[in-house]
Length: 115
Length: 115
Image (cartoon, rainbow over all chains, first blue to last red; front, top):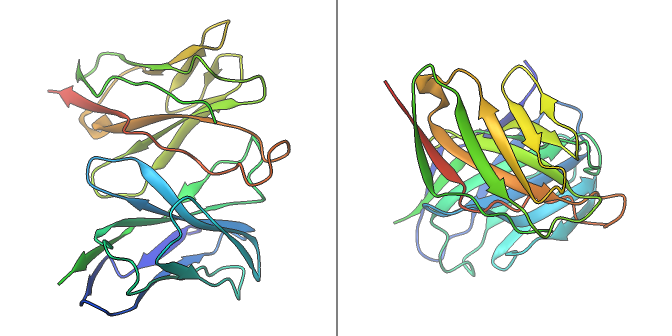
C-alpha cells in the first residue's frame, strides 16, 4: 500500500546526543514536511522540501537539520542544540508544491523522549 | 494565513450528526478552508476542504457561509471512532504565496462521541 512511514515509533535521546528520525514515502510525492506537536498543542512546521536537494526552514528550525537526497526520503536530525526536544514529530507529503487543491498526507509520527 | 477560532471541546451522541463550527473572519479570497482530524497519538487525517461552495465526500460535509467568515464541518452519523481532535485550517495557495503551503494547526476541537 502507498503511504508514509516513520520510524521508530518511540525514540529516546540522551542529553547532548543527536538523533535522526526517519520518514519515507512511496507516493511519488515531490514535497515533504516535518512538524512538531507538543501536548495539547497544534502542529508547528520545522522544515519542508519541495524537491530533491532543496529544503527550507519552517517556523521552528533551530536545533534541527534535514536532508533530501532522495525523493522518497526526508530524515530529520534533532541536534544537541535543541534544548527541548521532547515532542511528537510528524512527517507529511504532498504530490506537488502544495497548491490549493493539494492535501497533505501524514505519517503515524515518532514520539521523542529525553532521558 | 488567516487565523481560525474553534470551541475547545464538544460532545455528540453516537448516531447523531456532529456539527463542528469554525470562525475565520479574516479569510482572504484565495484561501481555502481545510479540515483535518487527529486521533490520539496518530498523524492527522485529511477530511475535506473547500473554497466557497459547500462540499461533501464520503467522510463529511463542509458548509461555508456566503461571506466565508465561518464554516461548519458535519459528520452525519457520528460513531465512536470519530472521537478525535478536529482542526479547521485556512490556507493560502502556493501559487500566490511561495512557501505558503504549510498547514497552520491551532489547538482544534476535541470531539467526544458519547455511546
